[in-house]
Image (cartoon, rainbow, N blue to C red):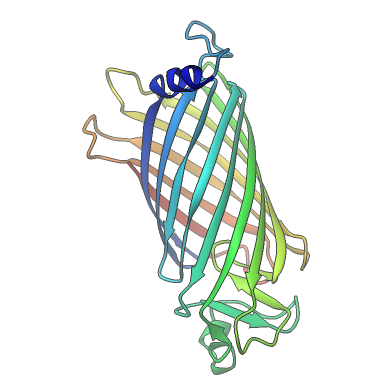
Length: 271
């Protein structure tokens, strides 16, 4: 058994990823670092389109923003090419800056950016701590130059109520939503691209263009959001110092606080 485990470990490789993301409407800045040790499964077959990527991975994950920090671990399982499953367990610390942990009395309270500038809401901003657990299965496929991915995220928040907080709900800045102190958020996404340029082992440059749909639902508050818009993914240079760039613009089709325009704007650089 020990020899088998040692042999599997020696066959693995480390995959490191850094990402810096910026969003607008609402404003946000986030840096993430993930390190994953990946081991091919026993049924992985380099010559098979369906089983070539089959692997298991695990490693640490860190997320930093001006409002909070998270750290913990992730596991990653790809049984076949069309299914990708990841799960995480993270501890979250909210600084008490910006939105921090802000409590609200009702699930339909105003949590817009304008509301966070009022004295009444600022007074309810606290530092805080909690835990986040989640699983994200993703169905994915590629036919010629057409690429489709459908990640389905389920995340559970378990928060320690900060001292001085009196409301039954709080604002979570990453999901831009009101939640109960113990609550679950579901995000159903669909991304469809056309690969105008595909990367290769010799040339990592690429350009994909397509559309992204995100549906978000918070079970404890019935907060629902729906966004739709165009998206591009590209790497403009062969240099490893030049990141993969991601940009998308989404109109708010449904939201308790956002109008259709101005749209949600987001971009990320990934190394």
